Image (cartoon, rainbow, N blue to C red; front, side):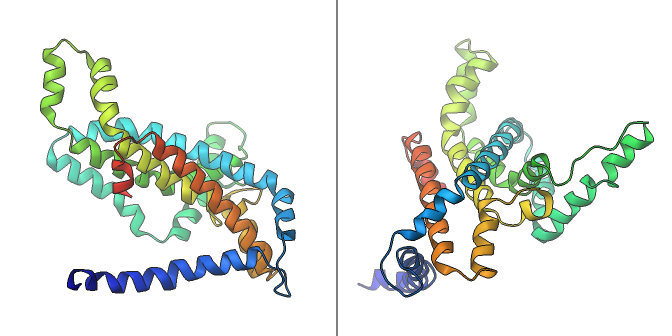
Amino acid sequence: MRSRQPLIPYLIWMVIFVIVPLGFVVYYTFTNENGSFTFENFQYVGKYASTYVYSLRLALVATLICLLMAYPFAMILSRSHAKVQTMMMLLIMIPMWINFIIRINAIAFVLEENGIINKAITVLGGKPLKLIHTDFAVVLGMVYNYFPFMLLPIYTVMAKIDKSLYEASADLGGNGWQTLRRVTLPLSIPGVITGITMVFVPAASTNIIAGYLGHTKMIGDIIETTFKTEVNYNVGSTLSLVLMLIILIAMVVMNHFDQDKDGAMLL
């Protein structure tokens, strides 16, 4: 009985700040303004179906880019000297200490019409490009802000791989590609799955990046507007619940590939 007592504060925290809010979301989803049971709120899901697709598409692109960048970087970093690893991880984490809004504004400053990139293009004799308020800018903002969330889990898993396995692969005649395919990749899958989850979830539900860098609202912006501006808790809760279910399904599919469930442990 005593062993369970330390868990009580955490259980209370979970109930107050997770279970209860989620209960309110479910309640408002299936009720109208009068508190009567209804399914009418789900008609707005169809109205914003294209926004859901748009948001998920950009989130998938950003997640894929983060993965393609983070995997080789993590592999090189995990095999580097300890001092190099410490320095690189510090350089990666320093931008995360800066306020999220400031980081977004910094990207906007670089991409705007009179930003650094367009000024350089103009000096070289070219015409300024339309960079800000585009899908490219939104994806760039996601990659810039969420890249560490992809890198850290993959690096953590790779750093724990026994180096003798690489030596054994070489002794058995395995080349670099065969070692990657048969040793590194299978053992790093839990980190990859965790990284994909940690990037895709915030990218799909973000309500700030598109507002500063994009030209079209994402589903997170629609939900925020529904709650704050329109003050319609019923529709906002419905859109939120559907987004949560989509993300949950995506996480279940990803965890299906993690046969040892090590990725879930990292989460």
